[in-house]
Image (tube, rainbow, N blue to C red; front, side, top):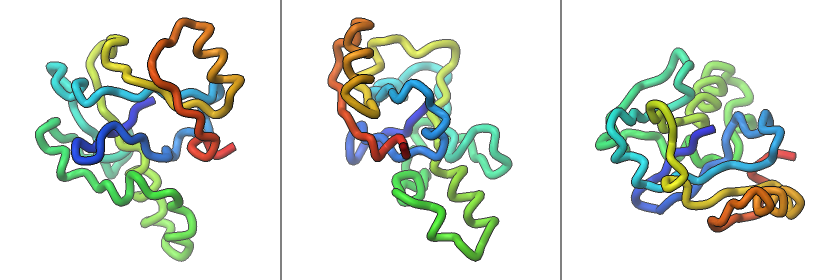
Length: 138
């Protein structure tokens, strides 16, 4: 699971169109420093989408942050199935990192509830954790 970090607002994580598929109820928050890893590419929507543009990290300003951070894309496009598909894909913007993201680049996590927070803590996760059930659409 990936999230886009807007350098102007910090490491905020958007509600993500793929979050309902997360069974574990947890989402890692990448550091902005991840953009400095050689070979990193930004996808302005889901990387497998036919609408995707691949961008260099220096092109972060070209991302459609209004679409990425929108709380809802369903009601906005009730009468326009194409706009709905494109917006849903934009909500899945990704940071594509070759090989593996080292743990030093994970600065925190969002979890669905206290039980998941305790589970994550029991695994040795020692970064800040935010409980936010709305993010996970449950």
